Image 1 (cartoon, rainbow, N blue to C red):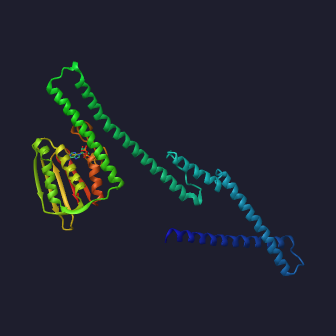
Image 2: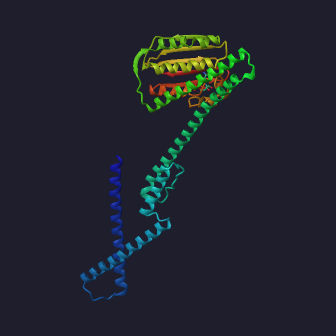
Length: 358
Ligand code: ADP
């Protein structure tokens, strides 16, 4: 039954109940009037028809008195509850909406004794709560972005000042080292802005996915080759087992997924460690990509947070590694848009496996 039909049924039921109540009250009033005539005028010489009409009239007067008393009691009850008549109620709701419109989301109306307004009040309370949560997320986001911008800027301006200082008498090696830090921090800022732009564009869904059929094994192969300078620098052993498979998706965005996952595996695996990338085509048509490392691993309590924006398990180490905690949230968003899922299995000091089902 749809909401409109339910509302019509409610109305019909209320009318029926009201009619039955009216009939009962009128019957009670008629009986009382009849008894009153018997008690106060037992031997009336009136013909039965006149007596009947008189009883009906008396019953009607009694009925009217009862209805009047009922209305008065109802009014008194409403005024006792703080004037929640229609006008009082409207003011209360408008007041709540006005507070919400002005950014005050601490609105909570207790939905007791408001009858038909209960659902509206529930909706207003829910809306205020959700807007409050969103406002909290917005504030967190701003403070995270400010922090991520502020820390590289502090470092850049500090080292630039040091390099300008004639009295510091720096060796050429020190100069090169500080310039290297300035370059790395600038890259970090640029990556942050790039990631933020991508996240916001994916979340607003302003740019639709550019889906097409392509060879997933070849894409993984080229990402491994592209990151060769990084894994070679750490002397990591990389093993790939890629079954030929095609995939229907946005090639550019999915390349970003593999770069993020493989980049993290390289970043969080100490020198001399090993990585493994596998691709298996499932019988149900899904492709299963696994990226495994034997690096530092992720503690169970951190695993549920790693896909959140700006989350870093070890802030100091991540800063040194040039991360901004957006890589995995971007990865998850891209996979969500493809209707794909990502899981992580990890144990501290043993390593991690990220599995993507496409
Ligand atoms: P970033 O963009 O800084 O690399 P991510 O969103 O990609 O951040 O990752 C979030 C956090 O998850 C990182 O701080 C890191 O601690 C943890 N993490 C991600 N991948 C791995 C991994 N393969 N091994 C260990 N920790 C990882």
